[in-house]
Image (cartoon, rainbow, N blue to C red; front, side, top):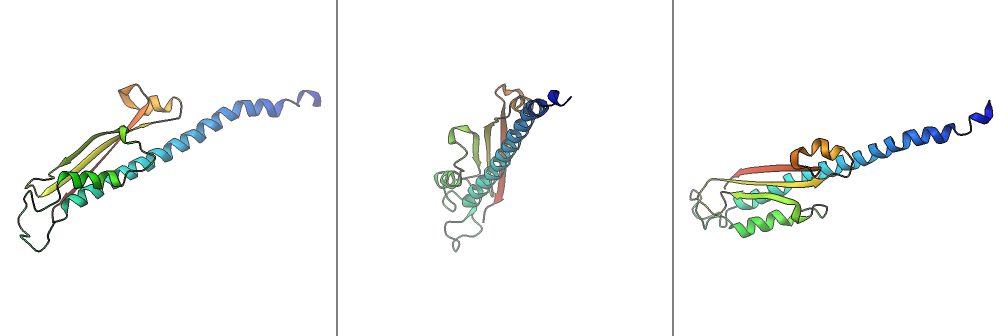
Length: 146
């Protein structure tokens, strides 16, 4: 009876190893998605904060005009300054800056990022209708001008 039990460990490993690898890659993808979401929120928040700071806090505190707050190029520089090296710039979509360079009292920065998942089948399940298995992560930050 002992001679038939020699291949038991190999058979069990052949059954369990693919599931184990699938779970490990899933944990890795979840960590990447969490990092992307956190960093995208941070980027939007920092860009909105940069747009709300008054250029000269001592002059005309109740006036909101084109020259009282930073222009669009400074806000865009603040947004891209905090981009993670793990997030390629070409995967960002719908980056909008509302209320920057205007007399509005509120600034809203929003952005989306397309994250391609490594886990097989999970990308097609949570990736939506884009057919690529990419997860679209979005963030919005709104702040009132000083």
